[in-house]
Amino acid sequence: MNQAFIALGTNIEPREEHLTQALDLLETNEYISIQKKSSIYETAPVGYQDQGDFLNMVLALQTNLSSMDLLEACQQIEKELGRKRDIRFGPRTIDLDILTFNYENSTVERLIIPHPRMHERAFVLIPLAEIAPGFVVPVQKKTVEAYLEELPEKDKADVRLWKTEI
Ligand SMILES: Nc1ncnc2c1ncn2[C@@H]1O[C@H](COP(=O)(O)OP(=O)(O)OP(=O)(O)O)[C@@H](O)[C@H]1O
Ligand SMILES: Nc1nc2c(c(=O)[nH]1)N=C(CO)CN2
Image (cartoon, rainbow, N blue to C red; front, side, top):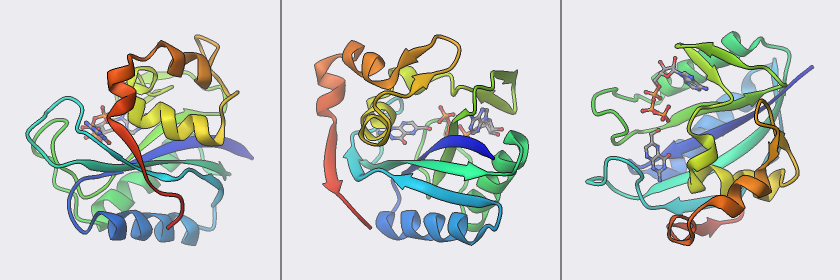
């Protein structure tokens, strides 16, 4: 069995429904089992600013898919939920990013893991710390909590608990 963390994000209404639909699609995949779900956080947009707030959450999964097959499953869900890829870092119906996959370190453009921007994103680290604070992120071998401590307070203030369960 492989162990993965994935991050979900949406900033197009109905945002909550996009998250529940993505969770349903993951749950119906016979090769994926969701082990843990973080709470849902409402987060100010990072990067491209002229867009609405996101809902973000993180999941711990077990899967017997390979990392590439898990990426395909995630991209299929993005497609089914009608995501349009136009503005980089721009508005999205649903975005599924693989954060880590076992202790794999992949550097091919299609799949970079650990996710290259996870260490600097409060909207990833805060929900990840909720479900796996002591997890040692591969390669740099630092815990999620240690990364979180390095983040500026203003970044953390942009991430607010929205709902503990959906
Ligand atoms: N760890 C990863 N998880 C998901 N996609 C990845 C990963 N590494 C590379 N990719 C590739 O990134 C490409 C662009 O992804 P996407 O459009 O979702 O980027 P983005 O969400 O705008 O930015 P970000 O990756 O910073 O969240 C995808 O085609 C995918 O193949
Ligand atoms: N708050 C927040 N900001 C973002 C997000 C996201 O999920 N949440 N995703 C992005 C592109 O992946 C760019 N900016």
